[in-house]
Image (cartoon, rainbow, N blue to C red):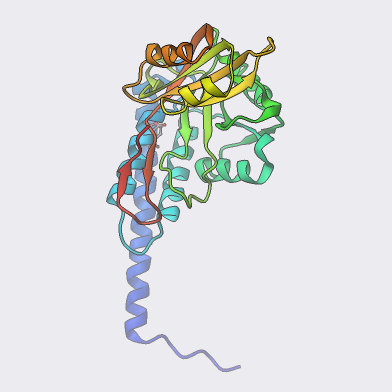
Length: 289
Ligand SMILES: C=C(O[C@@H]1C=C(C(=O)O)C=C[C@H]1O)C(=O)O
């Protein structure tokens, strides 16, 4: 057997440079890990049981995207940081992700793995209700529920209405774009630590009578809404996402004017405002809501 020729000096030098950078990146990741013990003490994670701080994570992801340039695709840099952040959060306080597969197994599995990696355990559920119930029975677990209305799921958010019930605390992906590799709009539900509530966008559970196309049309320019049929014939249970600056009163007034009567409302959580970049590598531009 003939031996392969030795690499040229130029190639050997470039490989040595890559090895040096790899060792440095690994050293920095290990140094990041050493901060965790101090972080647990400062955040009193033992008491709340949850280390997840979605507003901080949304902010970190925005800054990452804003400063990113060069050869490495945005999808790659985003997924690397998601795995770093989610895994370090898990190292602070172990948690399980309960994923609602009712929008399809493949898309939701991508959402879970992209945002939480392979170390954080995940449990599939056929429906939002089971995922939310698992979170209610846990200390620091998360549920991932598709943000679009899915017939079979009904008004799953009504289980978040009671005081002490889990709440919506984030919306994924943190950085939206048309070609996002794990872009299924997804709500994250958890029993939030008191300092983990993000509320730039507030999510309201609203029950109305007299729901119909006119009311839906009046609502659509004001807020994103998921609707499910409610007990009464023309009743609906709504999950209304109020964008920054939009008040509950405005939205309810618009619905009433269009002919609905509002039966009750309850705040069921909130999340960081949505952030959209045009497409891979483009300069970030904040979304309208
Ligand atoms: C580190 C923290 O805890 C979690 C882990 C983070 C990380 O590893 O970067 C960021 C936000 C939190 O969800 C923090 O609160 O700063």
